[in-house]
Image (cartoon, rainbow, N blue to C red):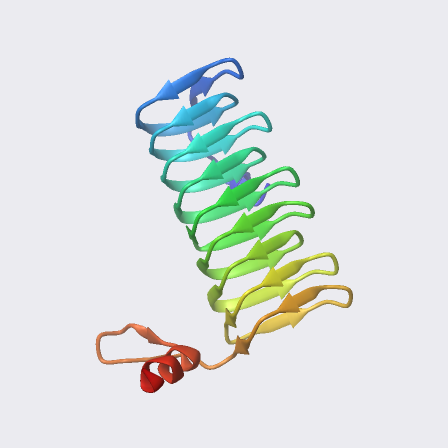
Amino acid sequence: MIGFRKKAPSLEVIIGAESTIKGDIISKGVVRVDGDVIGNADVDWLIVGETAMVKGDVVSRGVLIDGKIEGNIKSKETVEIKSKGIVEGDIDADWILISEAAMVKGDVALRAIIVKGKLEGNIKSKETVEIKSKGIVEGDIYTPRLTISEGAIFDGRSCMQITTNAENKDILPFERKVKKSL
């Protein structure tokens, strides 16, 4: 577990496999979900178990997913999607690991990513993107450093040049071409 090696706060909340919570969850500790949550989660650390389903947006320092999240994720540190994990939504994090057999459907913005599973969406990385031998990326990649291992599948465009405008916002070459042609 990449982000959970650091000392994390104690486990504060456990939502059991037979439980459903309708409403938002706010906690400064670790929240483990094995049941269903229909609502947003604003927690320090979130663990989504294999039997869990979260329908809502997540704001967290770190997220470990072995179940399913339908919603956007904003993480200050790491997001790790385990082999049975599924994310349907955009992810904004510092670091992401998509394990073999894991699935992400959405765009990701981050510092670094390792893809061993499948990602359907665009990647905007400030440092590096690695697609491992069984990894699949269907979408465009914007990063200064790209590594594609033998056996990996990449279907999209790559751009290794990202410039910044006066408002300190990234301008991506593919986006410039689209805007000029409109």
